[in-house]
Image (cartoon, rainbow, N blue to C red):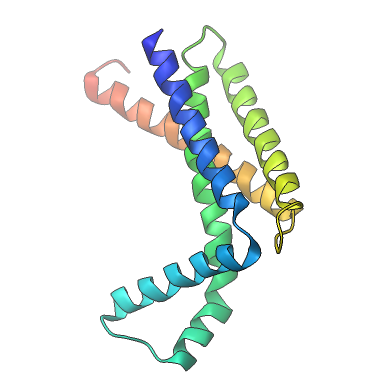
Length: 155
C-alpha cells in the first residue's frame, strides 16, 4: 500500500509540474526557453555570446527545445504512470493501454488549459508529441525493468 501511495505521489508531482509550466504566460514561458538555450550555449562554448549569436541561436533552437521539453516531461509522466499502474493486478497490455490513454488525456487537458493562459495556445501537435513522449517513457520503463531482472538473474 505504501508503494502505491508513493508511486501516486510521484505521478501527481509530475502532473503538477506540467500544470505549473502551462500556467506561465507566453512571455514568461518564452523567457524560460530562451534562458535555457542561451545558458546552455554559453556553457558548451565556454564563453559569452554576442547579441547577434543569441538571436541566431534562438531563431533555430526555440521550437526544437520547446518540443523536446514536451517529449521529456511526458516521458517522465509515462514512466511514472506505468509504474503506478503496475502496482495493480492487471495484464501488462491493459497497463500499457491505460498509461498511454491517461497521458493522452492529460496532454489534451494541458493544451486546453493553455487556451486560457495569456499568450499561450493549445496545439494538437503538442498532444501528439506528449503522447509519443509517454510511449517512450513506457518503453524506457520496460527496458529498465527487463535489464534489472536480467542483472538479478530473474529473466
